[in-house]
Length: 206
Image (cartoon, rainbow, N blue to C red; front, top):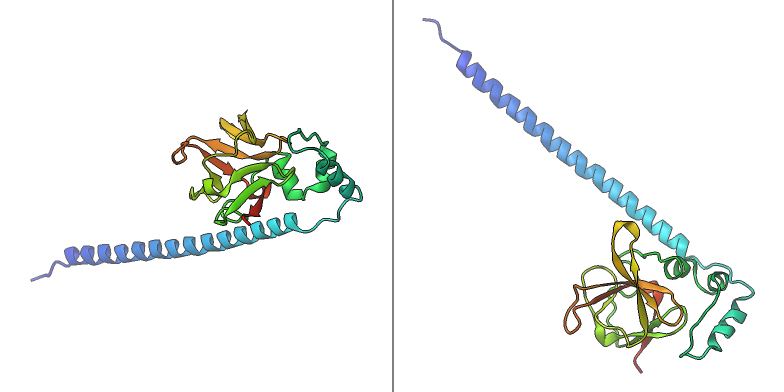
């Protein structure tokens, strides 16, 4: 009597093929995670290097002191109209990029996103009072967020850049870019003023 081994051979082959495929998938997953981790780490490193490069102290212009004196001589209830060249000489490169060119700083690695001190936030360019710290809340976005500015301290302009329609927030005194405002904030206003830390200066409560 001849024993039919075809069925058992098929079963064994299917079992081995399954193990080979599973092993290959597991290796591919490990390899992908490892590769992603390397890229993520590399990207983070590049980001940190870039941030450090932007934040490095630049030699100050000989005219900076005169421009600051000119700025300080302007009454706080009057508009500030410095030229871009003047702003460039008294702001850091990162401040100029954000405040005068409407840039955006990185989320979760800026000065005030997780800041909880009592006090007030002023415009970093002209010292105009913008927010009371009592209106600050944790939005989970990685940028400092407030539900209400000091009355008359800001203006809004429709921003259609980057394929989006948003309301840009500017300092009412010097027209510096501060951030954007959205309608998903908490009571009592329902607004979220999403700001750049580099556009703000914190003055602690005395």
